[in-house]
Image: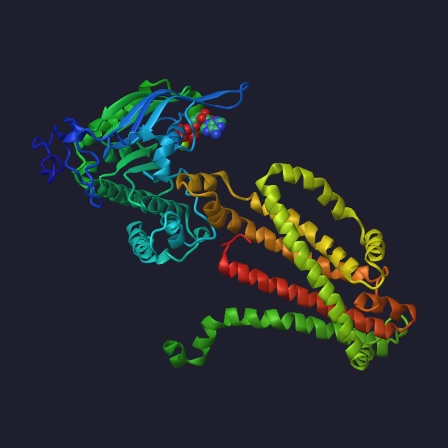
Length: 309
Length: 275
Ligand SMILES: Nc1ncnc2c1ncn2[C@@H]1O[C@H](COP(=O)(O)OP(=O)(O)OP(=O)(O)O)[C@@H](O)[C@H]1O
Ligand SMILES: [Mg+2]
């Protein structure tokens, strides 16, 4: 039933193989709906370029090596999922890109600029592992926070917030306070907040971790749609292999102690393939899931990491 | 609205009653307690015949209040002014110094000792010194005492409040490249507000008590504290109790004012569930 379904927007006619056909990033048409600037036209700087990035925490006496020699390039408009055992440095890598930490060594560029500059220019939107809402603000006011701080006019703010609240399915809760929401609802507010300024780069740290399966699938579909519509690059941390394969152009597999990248799997599912039930049931999708699972298990699975899960 | 008017009486009472009952209860409960208390008191005095020397009855105190209305009002005013000036001064200085302490750890280190000392200096020791410092006919000594008493909880709570921001929220503001002022407005201030309010609530009653007690230890005559002590000294117990009643009213006024401030802040900077 799923195999003989014609993929409506699949770039490759052979549906059995479409998943395996890698798509060069630069050949994709510009899809940034809100901005005519050809962000990922040929030769545009990648959204993220990390080379030889290491990060060590702690004092001289007790050092924790969170990341070691990480090389990662995320093209503009590309969707990259990071997957790996707990404590392998996924959040740390994301925080480095966001310039919330500085690398101990190596170089890190965001849209061809130093990370600090990209942060000052507000080139990214971030959704942290914890929702991190301001408890004294309503849902609407939380989503409006970045718009407020960056001086968006009131009318525009209002309209954008209304859109986003609907997008994450919290229309009835716009005036509620975070402590009146469930964990998953709070997480959705944080996602809406990260999208508020239509960033060219979205950093999302297990954003769907607290969601029920139904909402999770709906949010996945929405995120896929948003990333296509806005042409935003996404760095997406997840513990779910199917989620990673479902959403991403490329799944980056990491291992712990020291945290490093052990494998990369190109899913070959084009950005313009509709993320829906059909894709979830596609055998090619399953093959990629298996591939990622094997890559994940091939790495030396950290005993500590396995216990933490 | 239209639906409720057309509904039958029980239906209307149904949804409205819990909130309404609660509101009525909140007003009624203290009144009932007060009335019962007064009745028991009057009963003790008139029926059990507790000596009026020990405990004058409410009726007696009431008539003393009526006869000395002008004097009581003036004393109320004097003590109230001292307490209010002390509270405002202590609050302003407390918040400003707490701001400095939160901004620079050095200041905190310097002030910690002073504040800890101020917190334990008894009014008994401080009042005579300040009263003689400012001269026997000056209210400043009393105001200074009220200010010192108010300062300590304000400072301590504000310092704590200004440190309430979580690393996570600071990261968030950092990721928005928010300026120091923006971070203060959007994050530090709202996180601190409930703590500052707590400080003010504690400080307001401390300021009243301190202004009152300071009057026992010299300075100009006048004020509720002076009259309580002189009336008691001349065995005019009913009159002393009349001043005590005025002092209680002053305490209640201070309480109502802080509640009003709290409401105002809550309305401007709602703090959600945490307060
Ligand atoms: N601020 C810090 N100080 C000291 N060590 C840290 C700090 N932040 C992270 N680490 C260490 O770095 C390592 C990687 O942490 P990180 O949060 O990046 O893991 P993660 O891959 O996001 O894990 P999870 O999947 O559980 O979220 C861990 O061993 C952690 O103890
Ligand atoms: Mg993490």
